[in-house]
Length: 319
View 1: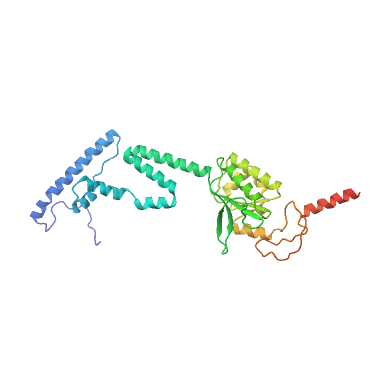
View 2 (view 1 turned 90 degrees about the vertical axis):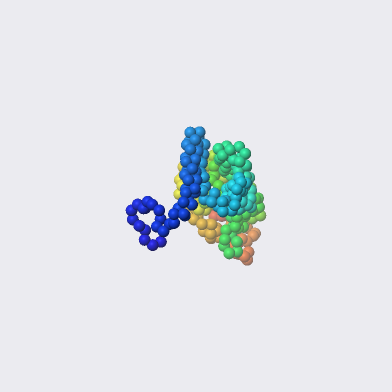
C-alpha cells in the first residue's frame, strides 16, 4: 500500500486533473447529492411511519448502468439473483425437505403479504418443527462395524448391538414429550432379540437434563430391567445428567462399574463379564464370550446367588 499520509485529507482539485474532466463529473456529483438527500428524506419518512429504512444500492446501480439496464425489469432480475439463494434452496431440498418447505412458504409470504408477517410465520413454523423433533426424535441401537466404527440402526424389536447386549440411544433431550415413547421402544427392543439380553446400555451423549416425567419413566425402565434380570448401564453420561439422576435417586441403582466413558469400553466390560445370566439355567448348553467364535467352552450353571438358594432349600428340606 505504501505510506499513508497523516492528518486530514487536503481539500481541492487533484493535481494534474484537467478542468474539462472536472466539469464532466459535476452532473454525477449532483446526482449523488440528490440521491443522498432523497435517501435521507425516505429514511426520515420510514422512521416516522415504522417501516424499513431505504438504501439506494449505488454499487448495484453502477453494475446495471454498465450492463445497459434501463427498466425495472433489470432491477427485479438482479434482486432475484442476489436475494434468492437457489443453491441453498437446492441443498435444503436434498437434505431436509421439511425445512425447505418452511423456507419456501416464508419467501412466498414475504413477497405476497409482507416482511413482518413472513418473519413471524417463519418463527412459528421453526418452533413447531422444533417441538415435532422433541416429541418424535429418532432412537437407535448402536453397534460396531468390522473396523470398529459406530453403526446407528433404527431401534426395532429384534435388534441387538451384540448377542446379549443392547445399546439404545435417543437422539434428543429426554423430556416428558418423548420419555414414555422412548422407554416403550427400549422395552420392545429388550424383549425382541433372538439372544437373551443380559445388558441394556443407554447412550447418554445427547441427554444433558431430565424433567420429572423423564425421571419417572427411567424409574419404570429400571424396574422393568430388574424384573427381567437385565443390568442397566450408562454410556457417556455427563456430570449434569449424573446430577439429575442423583436428584431422582436413580444413581444409587447404577454403581460406578455400570457407567462407561465410551461405547468400546462398554463392549469390553460386557465381554469380560460372566457369560451366563438370566432366569433360565445354563445347564446343558455352552456359551462363549460375545465377540468370539462359538467354540466349545466350559459349561456354566446358575449364577452364584441361585446356586446358594438351591443349596439352602435342599438343606431345609433335609432337616
